[in-house]
Image 1 (cartoon, rainbow, N blue to C red):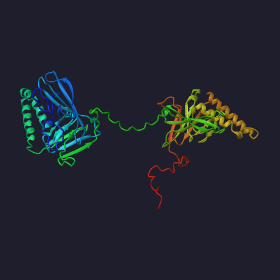
Image 2 (cartoon, one colour; image 1 turned 120 degrees about the horizontal axis):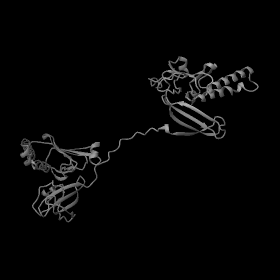
Image 3 (cartoon, one colour; image 1 turned 120 degrees about the vertical axis):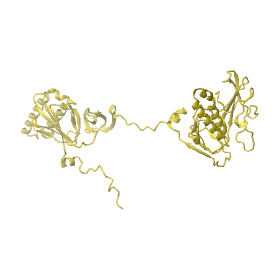
Image 4 (cartoon, one colour; image 1 turned 90 degrees about the vertical axis):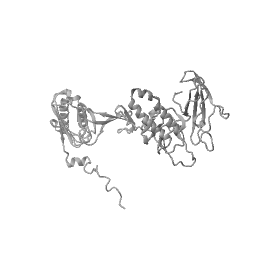
Length: 453
């Protein structure tokens, strides 16, 4: 038990009564008297160590209920050897959902004050912090008396070492004693974040005009002081990181219409942007498709990439061709319009092979209906394309994307590539029309949406 008590020490060998029992019971008295000989409910006795003489004493515990409040545990210790007494209270219930603040302007009240409660008297700018006094079942006068006792306890030492401070505290003690005589009106505030302190309402169940009770939500710091796990702020659902996952969904093969599965993955291209790669593999007919969608918006400017193929190692460069990109090879007088071959994420070699396959396997240039002169041109085109693929012929590869979403790897990045030129240009009206940008309204689009009445 703590050495600080809720009541003054009694004579040796006599159990200390609680403050409620010390007052003469009468009609309308709030707390029922606490006595060790109570036949209705005998207290539990526990042998414990006296904090004054360090010999065995007796602690009595009693669970009792305060009307219009809740259950509390009253503990009273008495030592038959030195006569030291101590009485404390603890809440028998859980910490409440909200803290409570009592503002009182009348001294004639009994009070339950827990360890967590802070007591303030604004008129004196005086505060008794939480945990500086043990929980007590007392009166307003008893709270002030305990504060006076606490200040007087170290006054002899202060007078010896800090005389000026001791004089100031003496003056303050006089003011506290004047409060007990109610020389002037004052306000007592008991603020308990646990919600388990209590101030008597002698007019219950009617309203007490001298008492204001305020319930409030605890701060996170108060939750931590009470040893409660602060409620974590509501977490926003985390966005799935699709870069490390391959998503699959069912579809039909574009060739045989058999059920197939399409794989989709989000890929971040270094020094460029995110793209979505979609690949379908049909187990029925063996057909495979590889399609790329831009993961970003249409860029403010179009992009024209001109690359000079000078070495066979250039064939290994990564290449992203969006659906809006056209391809040109000036040395072969070849031009591939936008949307042809769709979006592709491949290498320069893969792109040139796709072009060769597209041109040489054109059904209108094969079979009996083909033109002999046209066949010769295709063979010549195919031979030159093979020379470019083998590194035997230098050529320029041009990618023109009005949407700005195509890309060719720069192996010198972040430095400039001496064989590659990247130009950004302002789109023409016709290019914006093809991209559907002329009629797109991104600001103030709410205007005029309301249907006329």
